[in-house]
Image (cartoon, rainbow over all chains, first blue to last red; front, side, top):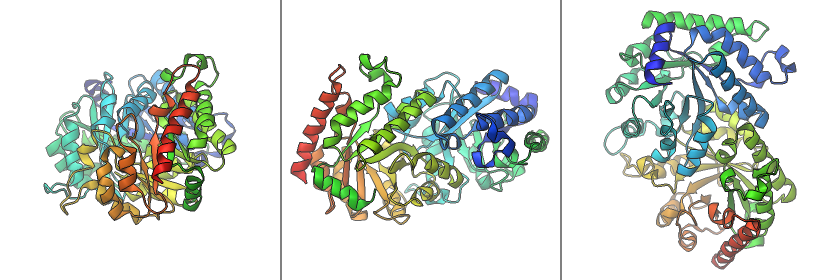
Length: 268
Length: 268
């Protein structure tokens, strides 16, 4: 999926919502636990219910890996189901991978067939990202400024040049690819800094987690982060997929997604 | 496995070798490709052949994930085989994971049953590491200064306090745990900096990749990095496991491991 196609979907749906599939076996409604593949069964219902309001789904690999190979198979089934049932949907594998060149190529091989985009950690530098940029219409989604409390440990450290580390990550990493194959993660809990982000990367899409359970404001994110092609994918995970833990979990998820999309429509 | 037990193994075997299981389906000898689980079949032979000369095995998850759930199952089988056949061997899951708290807990859940230690990327801060430190006798192995060329992009950036980023990672991260549950990754291609590493973390074990294929010198690593409990696990992957690609690959791997262990014995 390229940038133009992504923007088309955003216009068509009047939404820039990414639904995070952080599917925790401990939070799956009880009636699904008898299913042979409960994570996938849960995801399929959530995907079908929320697809009208979303332009992207973001399975978080940790939650599948916690169930071992059996969970990874359900991650794969989830990606394949989205691809088949909703071919225009962006799939973001939230993997936060990062390693040297030959290893990073293996991670690319593992994920680019299943997903359009993969989240990557920048600590080890360009070697981590390059292998993902070789695939046409695939995206590297690079961590810049995250929404967790301990982002303060290193991401905001001031460098000798006066800038925080996350700005240097944006500056260097934007030269590795283009706005057609690179996005950056910027947490919604830092909405005020989105203005500074836009000074460095005016054209890139930003993947913005932290709206919802983590407390970020959608309206502020849009005000400071939107560009002429929207340029935002705002993720919500727990607030949508765990809105209800009974048999009507999917309806409740749809209702939450619809509320966010309505708000997004007004902001577009 | 705790630090005392690890040191005991090092003394008993007179080796601080970690064998990296970067098992690439494209490099597995042809006769193994008929096996139902060729990555595991390869690993088992390499493990049996090199176990006398090694104190740790380090499967690199990317190589298994490149084969999807089927590959992940072979990673699991590899860890279980080592645990059963060589109960005193340290198993390091080379995963380079790094995410916010609730996600990091899932990664911990995925890996601590299988492995003694997990490699972690520090970019997102302490949230990434904490969940791994809750498990007794398990280790967080945190990236500090890696051996790849683009480590220069961010790891060596000078901070406002005059230090490079990797030193700040060592300083902060050493306060999160103890030398009994935390190690640091420092590349052998930077042997001269091991002296500076030891000024900050005199007691911690260091996991040192980059000897062999990446060009680092074992003798220099030992000179600058060794402490009173050895304090080093030196990894070699490709130089050992792909020493030969015929039916005698395991013998060749044993021969390479033996050579390194002999050199280590002299350095201890």
